[in-house]
Length: 471
Image (cartoon, rainbow, N blue to C red):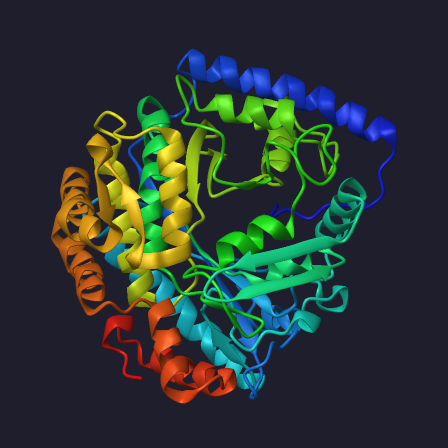
């Protein structure tokens, strides 16, 4: 979905032609994977950081067009809302000092990005959901002026056939109706990419599903939406309901959702997921490309409109050979750069370790663990091996962090990996994620979300990990 499109209105023949291309490319990918024709280079790590532009009053600042023109960096691009941006860094082979190189590159880009925001009288903030956000901010007037967003909104509304009904029950209850897809713009994330060697792609995808409960709980940073205290990571139910469209033959509901945890583990091939895309999800953007089928342009565009929390992607090596990449989407933006790199260390190490062992729990349990972790954070109770029930904070300390250390050692990144994983351990022992800090601030000072956001921004700019933040 990062690519721009030329048209926003489509005829039935556009959908028919797109489907034919999609059919050819999906079966080509299946055969290519089955025959071992995709790249099998060592794992590579990448990341995307989404952030908020806010004004002096800590309210959304819809200026990303002027901001990005001033920043003038090909690694920065607009998001759905005019008050959100995305920053990327050059991927790194996942070995040696990969984590510190990603940290350094992101810090250099972030520093320049902050400077430009300051010059425009704004501030740059990394947080899952902006605490000062109001529902009225999520209007079409604040949509980034790109054809792909306008077309996506029109197609989603056409399929849904009625306004969106948002309902989230957490510590408190939130219920409202919304007329467009802009609720999605209330969420920003820290997305991790893992280029997978072909012979480990299925195992790494399944391991990413297993690791999701740990990463969403340890990184939780989004407890509030529209002034309501909801989940530890409220991004999860918000995003899932923001583009609520079911599978083929279902306008507003159905067994398969465009945003969700998925339907099961991959069995033999990762291209099973792309076959599911073709068979079960209606096409939203039938753009026909003048590219050969081996570039998978239609398959990649269609996949970009299906938002699994762990999403397989197709990329290309510098010599043009396609490869699989796994996009881990469960972690929110923030609280600080060092916290996010620590979250990345947990994901990469844990996923790599789990991928080399038999799957320990059924898919349905991995899914339930994920939603329990998103709702309750470190206090969630989850089921792991031998159907044993754990408090997640204890499972992290006793099982997942040791596995993550071992995984990074297996990758040859264990030395510096221990530094970042120690930050996760200290966060757990202190019992203070970004989400918990926000709740503690409100408990101490009352529901002044502007004051809380100002204190959060001050801490973020100091750069110290969130478990050290004072209230």
